[in-house]
Length: 171
Image (cartoon, rainbow, N blue to C red; front, side, top):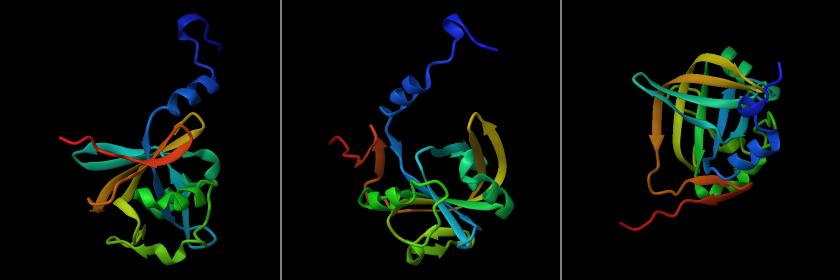
């Protein structure tokens, strides 16, 4: 069915151009499994879902296979990167990249799910609850079992196809 008139879907290029102007936090999603034992992927669509119970959600391209790994493992972590870790974000921007380069930075978190030991502003350790299909992506949902935060590090953001940091306005 093709939509016409005001209900017609926007062209993909215009959609992407609009979202390039929306700043997004940059995270590395880590999941146990895959050929290297842990698989990671850079993500700019990881956010809170619910406060009660505490839940988070991540949008993951179907082609990566990461949602299936998270479903099989029953857990995943969201590692929000600090501003000085753009090279880590670039390293994992390739789909389904395995952790050969950063193996030393990966540790077992509080709940034994793989997490990044350093270079983060926040880490969420999640139990996989559901995976929904949304267009060409999966929406991975999880209950947050444990968190840790580093409040003195500025976050890494993605805007206009580039990485940068947040500079707060003085009060």
